[in-house]
Amino acid sequence: MDSLSSGLVADVLERLHQDAEAADAPLAQTFTNGASSREEIIGRMIEAESRDLKGLYHGFARNFLSVSPRLGRFLYMCVRSCKARRIVEFGSSMGVSAIYMAAALRDMGGGRLIGTDLEPGKIERARENVAAAGLADFVEFRLGDARETLKSGVGGDIDMVMLDGAFTLYLPILKLLEPHVKPGTLIVGENAFEEASGYIDYVRNPQNGYLSLSLPFNPGRGNELTVKT
Ligand SMILES: C[S@@+](CC[C@H](N)C(=O)[O-])C[C@H]1O[C@@H](n2cnc3c(N)ncnc32)[C@H](O)[C@@H]1O
View 1 (cartoon, helix red, strand yellow):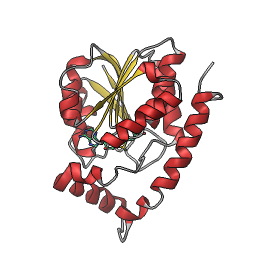
View 2 (tube, protein in one colour):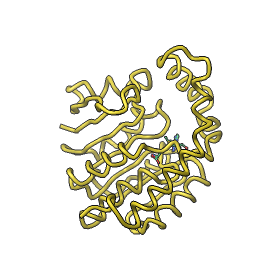
View 3 (cartoon, helix red, strand yellow):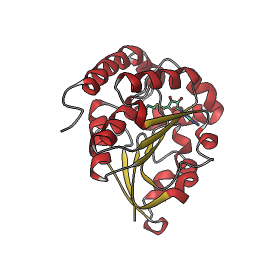
């Protein structure tokens, strides 16, 4: 049995992906405008984060920036295959990826997802969306900068991490969580660009205790799968 194929979760996700498409369509122009290469676009995004990270994401307060249905399905499958009980998500936005992962927790008998986002309005909508999908009992959203909200701990060892916030913070956030990362912990990085934060160099160096590779779908989007060895 899986909650993605039919029922309330599937219906809510279908609606949210439609809302996301409508809200985010104009955004595609913002960073690609006049850019001649993928590297140039990534460079612009990293530069914008370095200039004013909070201001940049505040500008996206009404945007979903959510995972694709394909990546969402992949997240669901990761949670199930590593039999996750505790998941941490950096960058929850309106809660779309959280719904995929929380649905898998419930389908496997329970667990907890701790998600965090900078934007109060997004956290509010993420709570509403997760509740609409009937998954509120499995999710805790923390409002604020993940460098602060995750500092107080997450209640124990983490089975899975989803990194989907500011690109330049993936390595600092991973290091913050490392005391709770154990052998077998899965880490999914969306937009884990080689150019940002040293994250890719770090997780692809086996001396740091990880094995890591880029995922074969959405090429160029920096989707990285990592396991703690
Ligand atoms: C790509 S979106 C996340 C999409 C979400 N994972 C989904 O698939 O539905 C990135 C989010 O990260 C949040 N963010 C960026 N920097 C952050 C930080 N330092 N702490 C917490 N959230 C942050 C932004 O506000 C934005 O909503």
